[in-house]
Length: 338
Image 1 (cartoon, rainbow, N blue to C red):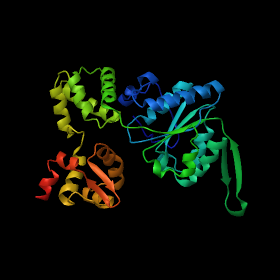
Image 2: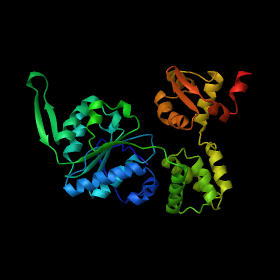
Image 3: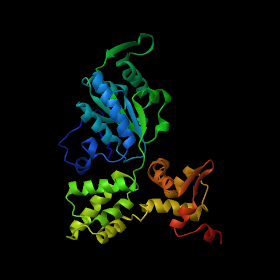
Image 4: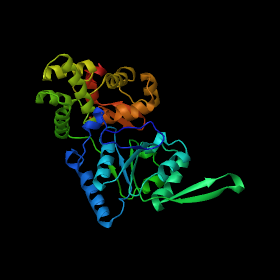
């Protein structure tokens, strides 16, 4: 549900965006399923700000990818009736990029920065006074002749998202005075409700049992659920048949997604831990090298879900496979010892 624009500057959020992902994104608060506590807090924040005639305070969302952080930014902009400008941490390479974005905002705009943890420290320091006092401090020149120029910015709200909040500096985190909210994995019922809505939007004729099978493999994540639904829809279309449970299972098997939602890469990680490292503990860098993967990919893509379902543990000495993880691979702890 989140996206990272490739432009260095922000892009306007278009209500006529034709991509499938955009069509599945909730456009109203009532359509946004799950994360009830966050929605309740945002409702109070936005309603109070609207009554005062002020911009809402800055908000930070964090949590695993695909849980709806970008969607919440869209809904906030819609709720207060203003424009949403989108950019990302990697797209803001220089201080001048950020200055260009901020000076082109209109009063009341929402600025959404995805992957904000990837901003470099020099850009962060320019962002501090912009967030705190609506001022942009630009240093012109170098050395003794350098001088600071202050530009007044229109009132705006920064909504930021990150999958790695620990990488945000403490000064930056403290400036999100509107609140810092963690998005949690969704429940099975919420995922199924999202699937039914998505199937209706996509025009998929699907049995409830088929949607159940897809939902069980969605890793409690709406983005994954929608991805699997679209691929199952394609499979059923080629077979020229409604999406039945049998066709859904065939499509999921073709994708290599098992009954726990694990991909071939997830299973490879568990297999390496079990067979090559005797269950662990093993360091992240060693595990990444053995998988020919980047360490960040293991930390951000594979581990959150494996930890969530209790297949993996992080210890001070490294990663350890659990008994549940062994059993999923067909090897119990007792069998491994024999």
